[in-house]
Image 1 (cartoon, rainbow, N blue to C red):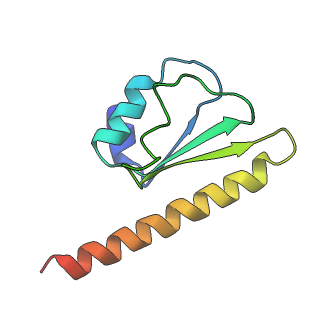
Image 2 (cartoon, rainbow, N blue to C red):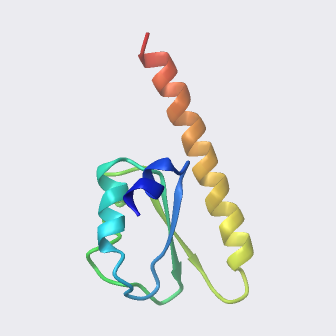
Length: 97
């Protein structure tokens, strides 16, 4: 799982129910992998996931969906991830020789 996470441009994690994905969340967090957290409105797996984006980490973002708008939310989320990656690339190009 860690290899797939690191090979990906960005990751999408469904976080509406507990499913044992805390370790994968930490892989993304530690390795600064752009991460989309999808949560069904009114749900969430655990309080141990989700606070990282509040102040500390800008490469993790939570998107809420319901049964009627999952497609639209996925488009919004992937658009955010692509834009974030583009900004990151531009910042690195400007910083490094």
